[in-house]
Length: 253
Image: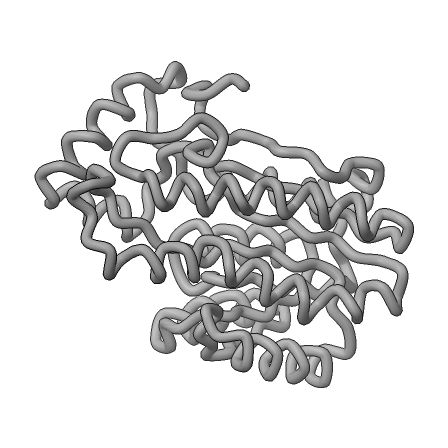
């Protein structure tokens, strides 16, 4: 069993879906949890459920696409918890549509949530980790950012940027004993992917992808969360700058 006792983890997008699964698993391994999300009701519910299992968990309402809000909330978390050991960036958004049919009004939202927010949180947390000479950063990417994905041109580009960003942070901060790794989920059951089933094009794409998974099932949030927990642990202290696919064998890069 991974031991995260005494660790404090910040999880963006932790209110629901993969982020909630990550919060649950990290707390089960002993970590206290700070949730950054814009979904207030669901965020408070997740924090309450974790706190009910004798772990400290606090929800912070935050638009992670705003650097000002990220900076403010990270400072407050350090005051409330005393320190930050683990940063998991999970918050994201996707709009599945062929590139020339995707309205440009979606571009900024996709890039802001799937890439720029990673820049903001890393920039806010890294000085603290450097000072402590210790830290684990796990960025949630996507195999769409490794091999491309029909209907996800802008999303794929943003996730590709996350992968390259993760590796550069790993190189720059290794001397401070801060590791930076990327977990790339395959198709996973979340509120967002469930909603996509009702969209004609997105539903067709998702159904085709599901049929191609060698393990013959969609991922669950906890499937992703266990990989995150390992990379956040002391056992993974000699792993940095790596990309791990959790996709049921759909991709084998």
